[in-house]
Image 1: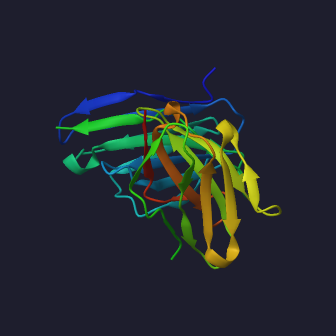
Image 2 (image 1 turned 90 degrees about the vertical axis):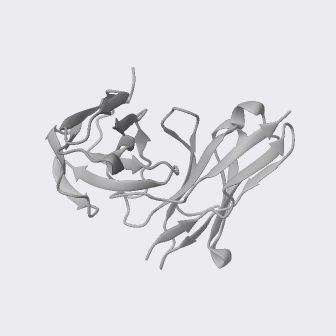
Length: 113
Length: 113
């Protein structure tokens, strides 16, 4: 069973559209994250949620809206997609204690055309 | 500001040769330190982590890393590289405990026959 699963794996869409990426973890973790990996492979935190509460919003445009319906799910909705949003988006989870490792999903490659 | 530097964008190593990937961090205290590996089209997998104690840590797949406080470094090593080790390697710190990871820019490892 996949520990952290994201859907879809690939997403191609036109500028201006709205899209969502779903993430689920079956590890019983309290903390979930969204990271963005750009075309140069640079990884940067976007959001962190702990027990369904937002704890980090790393200056992400408000077109990006995460939603955590429960501790096992963290979805990412993106409005009015722009070319610059093209990237690989990774969901991750961790037990939410100091020094705990994060477990990553396989990533969603978003291409905006 | 917290930062992680991986000075080598890519490294080519012959199969069977030894490997060292460099990582330096900038942080006021000793943060939690991690090395992750990303194979093409995959998510990130944890190789090893350092919190405290013994400064030489062992990880999976025969990797080890040494923490040197005086140099603010956490270099990754492997005595004999296998072709399957070709991937992107990321050093990361968790400056605030578990809220987020700050990643270096990554080092791409190429393995030649």
